[in-house]
Amino acid sequence: MKIFLGIAVLATSLTACKERTSSAATQVDNGPGVMQAKDSAGVVIRNNIQVNTQGGLKVWQAFMLRANGSLVNDSNNVKVGEMVELRLLVDGWQSKTDSIALGGSEKIVTDDGTSVLDVPDLFKDQPAIALHKAQMIRMQAVVTKQYKDYRFYKADFKVWNKDKDQSLTGSYKVNIVP
Image: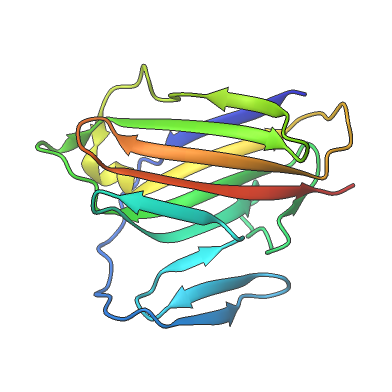
């Protein structure tokens, strides 16, 4: 199986977040099949994405998009050949300067545990970027061809600060449909 996978840090900065104070969660309906868990602090996690952080990082939005920019609904159903993008909006990266060196890894396995992608550091040869650019992380994946009918693919990812003890880890799953 061939899989295209890329990680990119978007070259646009985000505006400052609103003050966040409490953590009661609610469900918000965003159209057919698109629900989000939103707490009163404004944190939005969609698509059953699991995210953990350390070192003062806060992921305040995590969601999946299709190539046309539309949200992937909570079923996470995609077709072979369809690009999906995981987008993470992150606060709290730290640096002594105005730039940051990030590392990023991703491992993708099939429903039977077969590893189809395992990249230990997607940024290993990349220079540091402006600190404000690290607020939006994008990871794209495309299942280009299947040699067996897999029901789903599970992706585990990690993004880390190469100069400080900061990282975010997580996972998501996409279901393959005809």
